[in-house]
Amino acid sequence: MDALEAIRRRRSVREYTGESIPRKDLERIVDAGRLAASGSNQQPWDFIVITDRATIKQLKTAAHWMEKAGAIIAVVMNPSSRWWVEDGAAAIENMLIACTALGYGSCWLEGYTLPREEEFKNLLGIPKAKRLLTLVPVGVPVEWPTKEKKPLVEVLHWERY
Ligand SMILES: Cc1cc2nc3c(=O)[nH]c(=O)nc-3n(C[C@H](O)[C@H](O)[C@H](O)COP(=O)(O)O)c2cc1C
Image 1 (cartoon, helix red, strand yellow):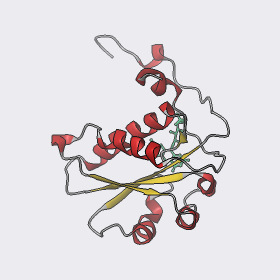
Image 2 (cartoon, protein in one colour; image 1 turned 45 degrees about the horizontal axis):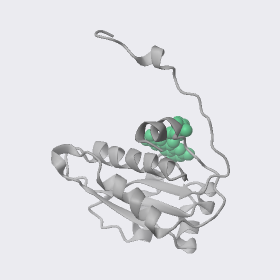
Image 3 (spheres, protein in one colour; image 1 turned 90 degrees about the vertical axis):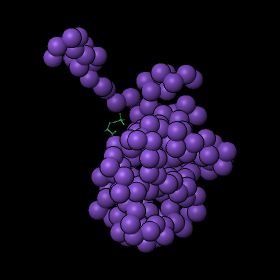
Image 4 (cartoon, rainbow, N blue to C red; image 1 turned 180 degrees about the vertical axis):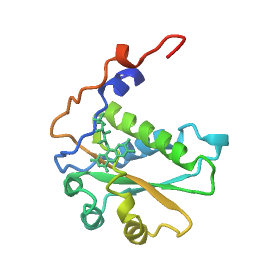
Protein backbone atom coordinates (compact mmCIF):
# COMPACT_ATOMS: atom_id res chain seq x y z
CA MET A 1 0.00 0.00 0.00
CA ASP A 2 1.47 3.38 -0.92
CA ALA A 3 1.49 6.34 1.48
CA LEU A 4 -1.50 8.15 -0.06
CA GLU A 5 -3.61 5.00 0.00
CA ALA A 6 -2.76 4.41 3.69
CA ILE A 7 -3.68 8.04 4.47
CA ARG A 8 -6.98 7.61 2.63
CA ARG A 9 -7.83 4.35 4.39
CA ARG A 10 -6.83 5.32 7.94
CA ARG A 11 -9.70 5.42 10.40
CA SER A 12 -9.89 5.05 14.18
CA VAL A 13 -10.37 1.38 14.96
CA ARG A 14 -11.70 0.53 18.41
CA GLU A 15 -12.49 -3.16 18.03
CA TYR A 16 -9.67 -5.69 17.88
CA THR A 17 -9.51 -9.49 17.72
CA GLY A 18 -7.11 -9.80 20.65
CA GLU A 19 -4.32 -11.28 18.48
CA SER A 20 -0.76 -10.36 19.33
CA ILE A 21 1.39 -8.34 16.93
CA PRO A 22 4.88 -9.37 15.81
CA ARG A 23 7.66 -7.35 17.42
CA LYS A 24 9.07 -6.52 13.98
CA ASP A 25 5.82 -4.79 12.98
CA LEU A 26 5.71 -2.83 16.24
CA GLU A 27 9.27 -1.69 15.55
CA ARG A 28 8.27 -0.53 12.06
CA ILE A 29 5.35 1.44 13.49
CA VAL A 30 7.50 3.21 16.08
CA ASP A 31 10.15 3.77 13.42
CA ALA A 32 7.54 5.70 11.41
CA GLY A 33 6.85 7.79 14.52
CA ARG A 34 10.44 8.68 15.21
CA LEU A 35 10.96 9.75 11.59
CA ALA A 36 8.30 12.49 11.84
CA ALA A 37 9.09 16.15 11.33
CA SER A 38 9.83 18.08 14.55
CA GLY A 39 10.46 21.73 15.35
CA SER A 40 14.20 22.48 15.04
CA ASN A 41 14.65 18.72 14.65
CA GLN A 42 14.47 18.35 18.43
CA GLN A 43 12.79 14.92 18.25
CA PRO A 44 11.54 15.38 21.81
CA TRP A 45 9.90 11.95 22.03
CA ASP A 46 10.16 8.50 23.50
CA PHE A 47 7.86 5.58 22.75
CA ILE A 48 6.95 2.80 25.16
CA VAL A 49 5.54 -0.34 23.55
CA ILE A 50 3.35 -2.24 25.98
CA THR A 51 2.39 -5.84 25.23
CA ASP A 52 2.14 -7.17 28.79
CA ARG A 53 -1.52 -8.14 29.33
CA ALA A 54 -1.53 -7.11 32.99
CA THR A 55 -0.30 -3.60 32.13
CA ILE A 56 -2.76 -3.31 29.23
CA LYS A 57 -5.52 -4.23 31.67
CA GLN A 58 -4.51 -1.34 33.92
CA LEU A 59 -4.37 1.08 30.99
CA LYS A 60 -7.82 0.11 29.79
CA THR A 61 -9.33 2.40 32.44
CA ALA A 62 -8.84 5.00 29.67
CA ALA A 63 -11.01 2.97 27.28
CA HIS A 64 -12.35 -0.53 27.98
CA TRP A 65 -12.00 -1.65 24.35
CA MET A 66 -8.20 -1.28 24.55
CA GLU A 67 -8.06 -4.59 26.40
CA LYS A 68 -8.14 -6.46 23.08
CA ALA A 69 -5.33 -4.43 21.51
CA GLY A 70 -2.24 -6.46 20.66
CA ALA A 71 -0.09 -3.61 21.94
CA ILE A 72 -0.34 -0.07 23.20
CA ILE A 73 2.23 2.57 22.29
CA ALA A 74 2.65 5.34 24.86
CA VAL A 75 3.93 8.59 23.34
CA VAL A 76 6.15 10.37 25.87
CA MET A 77 7.21 13.94 25.18
CA ASN A 78 9.79 16.34 26.55
CA PRO A 79 7.81 19.54 27.27
CA SER A 80 10.96 21.65 27.45
CA SER A 81 10.95 21.55 23.66
CA ARG A 82 9.01 24.53 22.26
CA TRP A 83 6.86 22.52 19.82
CA TRP A 84 6.40 19.36 21.84
CA VAL A 85 2.65 19.07 21.22
CA GLU A 86 2.95 19.60 17.46
CA ASP A 87 5.92 17.23 17.31
CA GLY A 88 4.01 14.59 19.24
CA ALA A 89 1.01 14.97 16.93
CA ALA A 90 3.23 14.50 13.86
CA ALA A 91 4.74 11.33 15.33
CA ILE A 92 1.32 9.95 16.29
CA GLU A 93 -0.17 10.53 12.85
CA ASN A 94 2.84 8.85 11.20
CA MET A 95 2.27 5.81 13.41
CA LEU A 96 -1.45 5.66 12.65
CA ILE A 97 -0.67 5.70 8.94
CA ALA A 98 2.02 3.03 9.38
CA CYS A 99 -0.49 0.86 11.26
CA THR A 100 -2.96 1.18 8.38
CA ALA A 101 -0.27 0.36 5.81
CA LEU A 102 0.58 -2.82 7.76
CA GLY A 103 -3.08 -3.82 8.07
CA TYR A 104 -3.52 -2.97 11.75
CA GLY A 105 -6.18 -0.84 13.37
CA SER A 106 -5.21 1.92 15.76
CA CYS A 107 -6.63 4.96 17.49
CA TRP A 108 -5.32 8.28 18.82
CA LEU A 109 -6.31 8.13 22.48
CA GLU A 110 -5.60 11.48 24.05
CA GLY A 111 -8.89 12.79 25.43
CA TYR A 112 -9.21 9.73 27.66
CA THR A 113 -5.50 9.61 28.53
CA LEU A 114 -4.73 13.12 29.74
CA PRO A 115 -7.06 12.98 32.79
CA ARG A 116 -5.17 9.85 33.91
CA GLU A 117 -1.72 11.09 33.00
CA GLU A 118 -0.19 10.96 36.48
CA GLU A 119 -1.57 7.48 37.17
CA PHE A 120 -0.25 6.13 33.86
CA LYS A 121 3.12 7.88 34.25
CA ASN A 122 3.59 6.06 37.55
CA LEU A 123 2.48 2.76 36.06
CA LEU A 124 4.90 3.06 33.12
CA GLY A 125 7.83 4.58 35.05
CA ILE A 126 7.81 7.80 33.02
CA PRO A 127 10.07 10.50 34.53
CA LYS A 128 8.31 13.39 36.31
CA ALA A 129 9.66 15.98 33.87
CA LYS A 130 8.19 14.22 30.82
CA ARG A 131 4.59 14.28 29.57
CA LEU A 132 2.47 11.36 28.49
CA LEU A 133 0.72 12.82 25.45
CA THR A 134 -1.24 9.91 24.04
CA LEU A 135 -1.79 6.18 24.05
CA VAL A 136 -1.99 4.48 20.67
CA PRO A 137 -3.62 1.04 20.87
CA VAL A 138 -2.70 -1.22 17.94
CA GLY A 139 -4.61 -4.36 17.04
CA VAL A 140 -5.90 -6.66 14.37
CA PRO A 141 -9.21 -5.00 13.41
CA VAL A 142 -12.52 -6.81 13.70
CA GLU A 143 -13.80 -4.51 10.96
CA TRP A 144 -12.67 -1.39 9.18
CA PRO A 145 -14.83 1.68 9.96
CA THR A 146 -15.77 4.03 7.14
CA LYS A 147 -16.29 7.34 8.90
CA GLU A 148 -17.28 10.09 6.49
CA LYS A 149 -14.95 13.02 5.92
CA LYS A 150 -15.72 16.51 4.71
CA PRO A 151 -15.45 16.52 0.91
CA LEU A 152 -12.39 18.11 -0.63
CA VAL A 153 -14.45 20.79 -2.39
CA GLU A 154 -15.74 21.97 0.99
CA VAL A 155 -12.31 22.58 2.52
CA LEU A 156 -10.01 23.33 -0.42
CA HIS A 157 -9.60 26.99 -1.37
CA TRP A 158 -7.45 28.18 -4.24
CA GLU A 159 -5.53 31.44 -3.85
CA ARG A 160 -7.95 33.07 -1.29
CA TYR A 161 -10.29 31.75 1.45
C1 LIG B 1 -6.21 15.03 19.56
C2 LIG B 1 -7.07 13.80 19.42
C3 LIG B 1 -7.55 13.20 20.55
C4 LIG B 1 -8.33 12.03 20.46
N1 LIG B 1 -8.74 11.40 21.61
C5 LIG B 1 -9.51 10.30 21.51
C6 LIG B 1 -9.93 9.63 22.68
O1 LIG B 1 -9.60 10.00 23.80
N2 LIG B 1 -10.71 8.52 22.54
C7 LIG B 1 -11.09 8.05 21.32
O2 LIG B 1 -11.80 7.05 21.25
N3 LIG B 1 -10.69 8.67 20.16
C8 LIG B 1 -9.93 9.78 20.24
N4 LIG B 1 -9.49 10.41 19.09
C9 LIG B 1 -9.90 9.89 17.77
C10 LIG B 1 -11.00 10.74 17.15
O3 LIG B 1 -12.21 10.51 17.81
C11 LIG B 1 -11.11 10.40 15.65
O4 LIG B 1 -9.87 10.66 15.01
C12 LIG B 1 -12.21 11.20 14.97
O5 LIG B 1 -13.48 10.82 15.44
C13 LIG B 1 -12.20 11.02 13.44
O6 LIG B 1 -12.35 9.65 13.12
P1 LIG B 1 -11.23 8.86 12.28
O7 LIG B 1 -9.97 8.81 13.11
O8 LIG B 1 -11.82 7.49 12.07
O9 LIG B 1 -11.00 9.59 11.01
C14 LIG B 1 -8.68 11.53 19.18
C15 LIG B 1 -8.17 12.14 18.04
C16 LIG B 1 -7.34 13.25 18.15
C17 LIG B 1 -6.75 13.86 16.89
